Image (cartoon, rainbow, N blue to C red; front, side, top):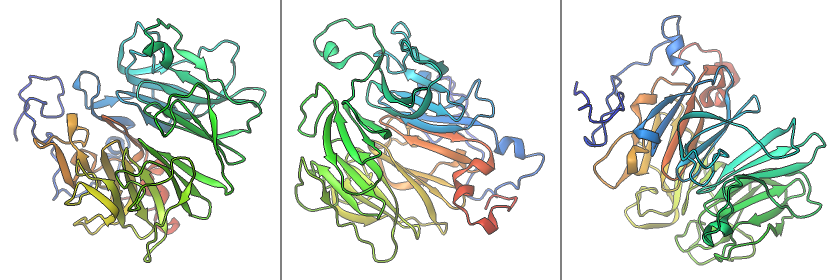
Length: 421
């Protein structure tokens, strides 16, 4: 087996100077180990796998101080990662040059998992409800003792930054419209940030879909359906309601909304995603493309394909194209990053494709893009339960089998099987 040239400090992977496949003792013929007293600890080890532009070229980071508290949510900005644990605690790593981790600006970057405290004045005993990350900032949705929802921004003020005005405040309470209802979810993408409320009101901040910077949050839409989920892309956003109907707003230059013409910039229009074989199980939004997972395990790609993220032969896929995967196992989950993708199969396998920069696919390729899904062998016997794909990062949390995505999506009569299929 080829050994690393040791010009880097990765220890696990062949280094970037080699640009070759990661070192791994697992191959396609390896039989997955049954869970027993010998293998149980190694399979259920609580770890955080980091691929891409991680500090000091690290590709695997043990979660120091992680303990037995599973990850609740992972979000990635351009070069930073914020993680919410189930015990109401924040941790993170990566760049902090703009205060995007909520740490003092003297800390330019975190080379290991770091605890993050919310230090906003007069806020005590708060509950963290959600997190989001833009390119160089983060958002934290909290609920106070009085039951009021607030959004805290980690990062220096954008306007001051553009005007070259020094700013040392890196944790700030966002100014929200008066009398808004409880906030359900926050999302962010680059400079744009959004949230929606219990009354299905959608608010937009940071930058509108015409590229204009906003001084404050504005009411984008009072949606007349119950919102199930909200997805934000580079120039557009998508709503999924509780009746499985899908609506889009924004630029459609890359056909990321799955229609062949331009779209409204200020009004949500219903999208005609129809699949006769099966209803839609999940949508995952990249910068200018979508992954659509059906209940039957089929995956469709639509939108920008300039970096192979839609697996087609053309630079743009204006209508959904079925993902062809030469394996027998069914796809149970999908994730879209800025310009790369990940799918999780029922047998526990992980496949990635798209832009290959800095090894964020979990393996190295000499070519600019990988236009067909390829397995990440290192994760073959791991119990995965949280995944996030960002701009230059892929972050995967592994842990106990009962917490895994695979087990949670299996039927009740097979959840007690003591061996990974």
